[in-house]
Length: 359
Image 1 (tube, rainbow, N blue to C red):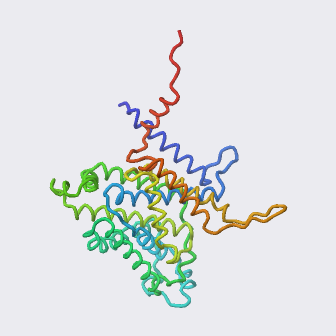
Image 2 (cartoon, rainbow, N blue to C red):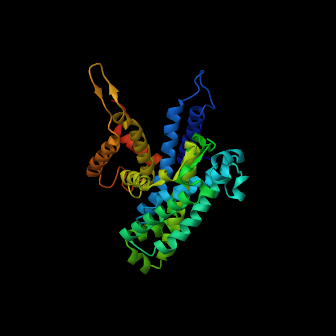
Image 3 (cartoon, rainbow, N blue to C red):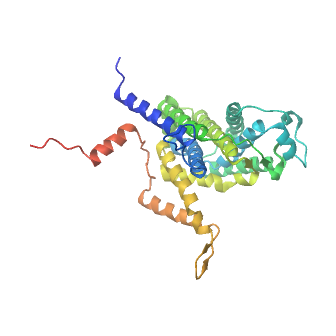
């Protein structure tokens, strides 16, 4: 049986991606070269985590048309769940030196994969409790409600000291996150959401986005489908938060304030509301620019003068650049289009057409 050309191309791309990740992670060596440096690998890990967060929020905002500002709160739930389940008991005793930890959690230790899955489930459960009352609202009111719930979650994490260690946060989280975990989770998220959006649920999400009244007239249960989108989006955000916690190895409630949600929302808008591949592309661009622009915040010593860095200037520059991009591309870089193997090969054929026989 002959394998279709599209499936062969996908298999080759997947094999190439696996080899590149293995080489970059140091598992493979070519001619004595082991892979990228630790800083480059860290940036790629952050790109993949931000891609997971952007795709999850895009499902709710871009495909379902529901304005949510509570992503940071669900990331915090996932991060704390993963950290508490993977930290060694001895490390927990050292971290909880002011207030003793709650008994059942003191000796609880799980491998990273079950902990990450449980982080998604726990986040999904709490998002269900939040979504039932919040999704009765629409538009800006929904955004304000989800923002309020996110702040409530953060304040609870800050004050339940026997569980979360309060404002001191958690330190000594095992540094499990690597390219296999981040890129694997991003790939899983992309294909899972793509299959979901290709199903009847995905078509219902898009119809709700276009016109809720018409969707309801066609027999679509608005509240049910909004709640499904909200729970799936929040669960993926919790898994992204778990990956971030295992990458940074230290977390605290201050990390999960509103600016974190705002950064993810900007990534979604930049990539295109309604494009998963656009979210991935924008996550890579935003992560790289936020790291590259650190230069403007650092002091520079010249032979005749000293240029002092301005804290927060990179955010200003990035915001101005985003405004310019939105003016030129009001629907984002990808709009509602997806980047596929067929579109890339089609573009390359148009850009560099093969020579036809010369006579």
